[in-house]
Length: 565
Ligand SMILES: *Cc1c(COP(=O)(O)O)cnc(C)c1O
Image 1 (cartoon, protein in one colour):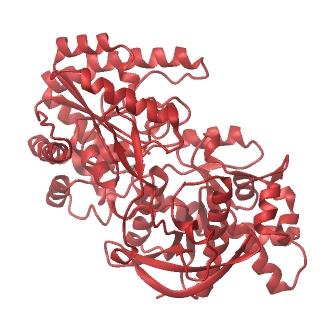
Image 2 (spheres, helix red, strand yellow):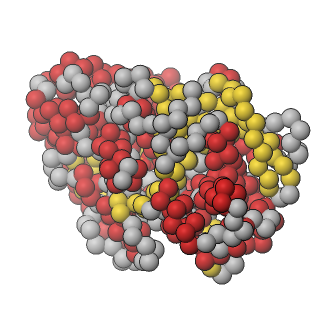
């Protein structure tokens, strides 16, 4: 039931709650789900809003040439969600769009619930062009995107009001996609006060209610819509007269709108906060480093281990700090179980039988150029010589490319084609359809988690945090969260140095060289010849990083800095 005390509304274009509930594509959605789970654990009075995607993001297949194919996800909302008895109307392109909603209750450790509402435009009576608006996440063009964002922002506020959430104090925009909610908050005020235009007092008042988290330094992550499109979709809405809030050069910039009308703005890691300040120099931008929901991203075997040695860790993730006291032998045995679970899944999915004794690297994330998934193959002869010298190697990949990202698809193809040419000592596998289930299996079942994006483009990254919770150290470039999480040789290893701004090609050569160097001199010899040392590193990844890079700590920061003051 809607509670009058609900104080925070959380808006996100995607929210990942269950692997088979396809309302997410990747990091942003998984973070949203983990945020809501933490809010439920910590009894934060919150409600969340997103869109229902009847065809999901997409189901990924990879053909025999290594090329990605996309298929719609087939699923039935009623299997996961409860229909809400509500109907609201949003006007776009001069037409009424009727929206209904579906509800999912996220239950916290102590039973406190946070509801998540998914807006649905597939309603009888809607225009044929409007019914598919909530079919695909990130499908379609600017025209589709702006209308989806209108549904999320404006529809989301109307939905909450229709459900009786009257006393919300903070509206949290998880990325700029949701910034149209600001327009609706202005409209509400103007209606209530019978005003004809948005004035500075309105801005001050609405600003107090808004919180904005920016998630990426990559320009494509910041939506910009031409003003003529905006006017076609939203007509002559009064708040649009305040062009100073969002506009320059004939475009509406969702990031600027959110920046201008939020009392608190943050990036998602310390470094990303700095990078965002450089991108938007006229704003005060803080940072709150991301986390992951610990209980959800800890494999079954490690959950049991923590239940035994660190009771209370689910309620209070800081307990993970005491993981240093867990007997080393138990850590290793538990890791072997998690590794076997992954290998069983790989056998089921691909028919490949992997050797659990062999050092195994995991790499899974969105396949896009700056993540440089194929960096480790830049000098294949070098990689083969390391294998000959130190020991065999298995590399397991996963990740979807956005359907329009050709360079991303080519990287998947390159890896798949290489995989077909390599032998037993250097085995490479690309797992299709990376989702949250595979995410957990991979981050917990490999021996090291590799990440080598081109700095400074990784805002935070969260999969390495999942790995840490499962005692899997990271080998990563110093970007995003890893700048904060890396203690060289103790929680994992770094690749390359801090300096960037060099030519891309030079940077790539240096990073590849550093990656080989670390594998050959540090990581693989530790695994193969100094097992006790390797387990000590695993324990520190759990204790130092698992206890900190979680959404309990993150949510406490949002409460202190953004929600309640
Ligand atoms: C955790 C997760 C992500 C985000 O990982 P990054 O390291 O931020 O790229 C993306 N997709 C899935 C399925 C995940 O589980």
